[in-house]
Amino acid sequence: MRDLANLFKALCDESRLRILNLLVHTGELCVCDMQRILKFSQPKVSRHLTYLKNAGLVVDERRGMWVIYSLANAEDETTKRLMKELKDIFDLNPNLKEDLTQLKQAIKDGTCTTYCVIYPAKSKRKKK
Image (cartoon, rainbow, N blue to C red; front, side, top):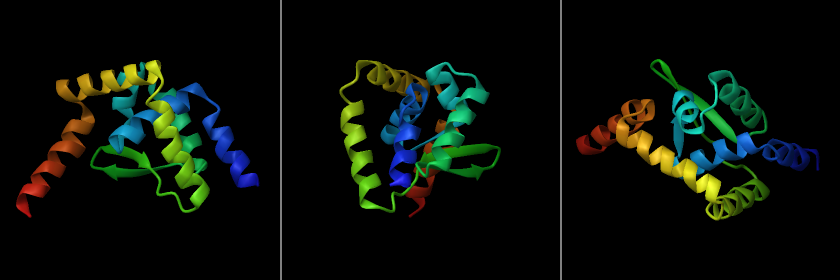
């Protein structure tokens, strides 16, 4: 029961919900992309990502000079189901839709994620 309470504590903040929305829809992003899209300071984004990481909702991976955050693989059925429902709920919220519009523009303009995640992933697929 304590794990469930900690999970909901992690979700009870608007900033963390906005971050999760971006990750649910993109798979992975770096801190600077989240800063740009959400118009948050780097310490604010990092603080909320740490909270989400401690709750077991996100993981990080260093790629060169970037730290890329993505959703953690849910190990229990409750978290899997909750994340699926959250995506559906996020899709109904106009403010979260606006964040996704900002994300699409950021990717179009060329973001850190574009250069360290999207382009390398495309080039890897071509080699196979």
